[in-house]
Length: 302
Ligand code: MN
Image 1 (cartoon, protein in one colour):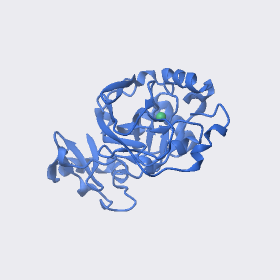
Image 2 (cartoon, helix red, strand yellow):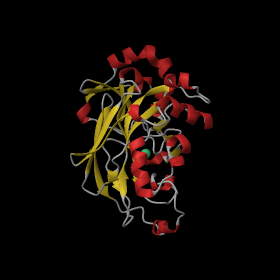
Image 3 (tube, helix red, strand yellow):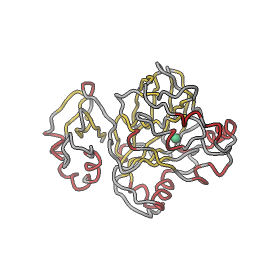
Image 4 (cartoon, protein in one colour):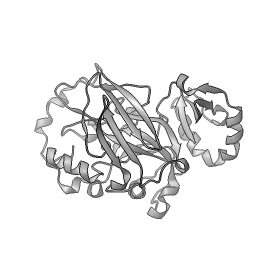
């Protein structure tokens, strides 16, 4: 199944060219704050499976093209993100920034990205008003956690996956704290839907590509991950409890590069989905902290 959040917080399923409203299964009002409709839907999924066929048959239908798709998860407990998790991307960043090998995902682990950076397939990527700095796209597969847990062993990790989505990890390159450089509003496009694991390709054979204005920049397959998907779940859950709806950004392959106002960024993950996102210049984001980057110690992760 493919599940969406649409039209102001409603949860639905995509069937062909239509979206079926699954509000009848929801225990959260669509306009509730915080907007946890999909998180609750995922948390209750096993309990609701028996009711799903009836809900799909009876739910109101609307053409997918007429729906305003939002980030499928609007209020996760956390977004876990793995840096430098493809060998070729690590080499690329090492050459650009002097990274040392402990900064690969298998030696550095993961970081967090602000939940409020999430945006949807209908939203533009809004560049902050920070002059003279490169803002890069990172093409990533998102893993969506289903059943939560702590200390999840490798052998059980796949049972904790609800599904997958496309994710862009947008970042200002530089030496400031990574979470700040990656957490501007709209710096984490997610979508266009969550496809459940049973309908997705095998986790170690998912191909993805990203293009800007029709020119391919990134192309990779999860078989080339440094820390693979089961190990990402094991590592993250060794530190913290994973909850239903948590998002894991699995890391970007080689080919990261700058985006500018007017660009159109396209991400396509085979068997998962695709999004086309416009890049626009925003007015917010200026702060003198961005003028001091050169004073930061060398060797900090990008
Ligand atoms: Mn990334």
